[in-house]
Amino acid sequence: MKKPQSPKPLKLNELTNLIKPGYRIFLGTGCSEPVIISKELVRKKYRWFDCRLIHYLTLSDLKYFSENHSTHFRHQTLSIIASELMRKAVNQGKSDFVPIKSSDIPRLLKKGAIPIDLAFLQVSPPDKYGYCSLGINVDINYTVAKTAKKLVFQINRNMPYTSGNSCIRFDDADYYIEHNTSLLEYPMGLKFTLERHKTDQNIKQNFSEKIMKKIGFYVARLIEDESTLNVGLGKLPPLIWKYLESKRDLAIYSEVLVLNHEFFDLLEKGVISCSKNIYTHIMTSFAVGSEKYYSKLNRNPFFEFHPTEFITNIHNIARNNKPCSIYSAIAVDLTGQITNHLSNSFYSGIGGELDFIQATALNPQGKTIIILPSTTKKCDISRIVPLVVRSSIPASDVHYVVTEWGIARLAGRNIRERALQLIGIAHPKFRKELLNEAKRMHLIYEDQILPTSIDGHIALYPNKYEWLYETPQHEFIEFRPVKPTDESLLQDFFYHLDETSRRLRFLVPKKIFPHEQTQLEVNIDYYNTMVIIGLIGDEDREEEKKIICAGSYYREISGNTNWAEMATVVSNKWQRKGIGTHIFKRLIEIAIENGVTGFYGEISPQNTAILAILNKLPYEVKVKTQSDLIEFRIEFTVLA
Image (cartoon, rainbow, N blue to C red; front, side, top):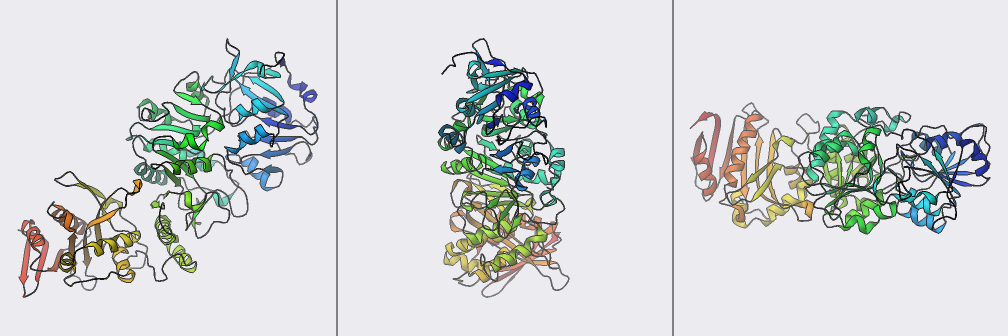
């Protein structure tokens, strides 16, 4: 409802007449903080006793916390994301911290559970209709403007007039200050991630370009065309844009929009089009970045800014096409629990993370991706840990965890499988330690092993041996080396082979494939031993992956022959499609690359498929027939 009179002009030195003891004062959020007012509030000449200063997202570097005047203000923050000063104050007891989801804040403001006596917000100049824009920070500022007992606007010509639901009547204010200042900027890029937050040695990140490139590669594999992205405010998530250039028709529905060159580059190339989403605009509640990017938002109808109560509404989030939430974390434990805090102190807030993660899970095509380097900056502390102390996100809500070492797929996995997945993407120097801890905690088999080389070092998974094969019938098969987490898949494959196929593969009517034996098939060194599997099915759409073929070689490690025994098997349904020939030839290529001289093996005379493959090879094949089996040898240096 329109106030009975127009807002009155206010001078900074008149704040002392406006603020009363015991007031609860709110400062505009993020990069829209009215810094000229903030600076005035912290000047030592004022003594407003027992006033509470309420923050949501504080990015300025003002020294709010005075040792000499502890009652100057009592600070209360709803988030400590991105603010080293606020984080330090909370952990020193100089500021109160409210752990709260973004979606709960508007409700509590409206109920008066978070009362605001006086709010200072920065807005654009009013248009000819008398409306100002909250600009780059609609978020909870919108609800604060509606619920505060007294409202003061800083009118700033540098504040963009944004589209969506960002407008508020100028006459809704009680007072206004006209002052044109640059908006706060949020430092971005690799330099930012390497240099910011230097006070806590334990959380320095190893954000080298090499590590980020690997993480970006894995994240890009998980993001499908036409996905709707929600990218968190941490140091790592905003760096992923440059790795998504090959995607098509992405959409954005995100609590925060981190503006950088890579983001606008995708926009200009049409990668971000929003054309396939239910919301055909970029949807957000606030933005951070720099002045040159803020100007691109001014009266730009493709960007819509909406209040927190709309953007973090669980039903609105779930409606998006293929929603994908990407957040960083400080650590993840072997069950999949995520923490954004240190063991002995608070480090982050909750924000909209839980809202988006839980809403994303409501959509059958939703994905939650947690990204983090595998270690701290000096590579001396693992960020895959046995157990987190302060959980921020429950294990049940995490679908994927990505480090520079790979992707851990957790959705629908049991605790044993989760532990092995996460150990597999930990830094190799910590994997044995994590394996032992997992055994101590009874998360995995007591006899569980890891892939190791002949000299005892952890064997690294070779991504270069992954490829996609298309059959003559235009069916696609994913080929890759086996992983320790494939044990159950391999057991299922063997158990579903018919008796004839088992006899041809093992030369005996083998009936059981226990863990003790099967784990030896999946924990290999990828050099002396190689097992390649072919898989169908899309595990990202809850369709179970299935192995439909396998090929392997085992090099003789006693002696100097460099020969390897090899074997292949293809399930009945997939035979006569060229798959056996394909995997046989690729195994030979891999073996030659790894210094193998040749293959040998034994097959049943009834195994006509392998005999046909041997006859087609470009190498000389020596065959020796006995009564119940055929021995063959292939030397790669001798052509047929």
